[in-house]
Image (spheres, rainbow, N blue to C red):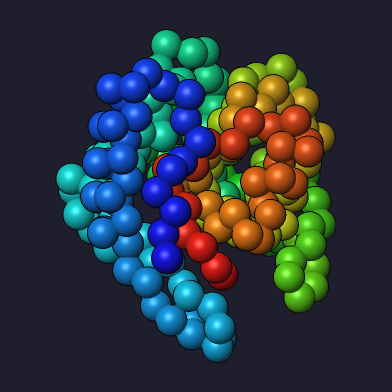
Length: 197
């Protein structure tokens, strides 16, 4: 089942428009049961990205609250955060910073370990990618348990970034990822929510 209300602070007219946009985005996302393991429903955004209209809608809705706001960099989490983050950076005339898995960046990096549901992994970014005090928006396609987003947030904070917000197309609120980021003082923007895993 889908939750239709997202967390937006907008005028009534904008709220009604957003419900129509949410319906369009939900229809564009493919749900794959029992992937990558039994009991999980994978929310596949490649169908949304493959449709120029829904891709544009998603980017426009993620960008809307920050139009006219000074944003220096968009930090995208590997891999779908690169697709969304690049488009958002273009719209906001900001730079783009990739946050990648360990060993994927060629220059001097800063690394952080973060918790996953079943273990620990590491991510990194170039040491010179962020100047302390720069205003940064963190981007990925989905927030679930929040382990990866929490790690990326801590990495950006370690670099001295002023995190404006973390943006995701999808939130799985039952898994608590949003709360992890909010506990770190980060505003979270999502466009749609799905129940379950």
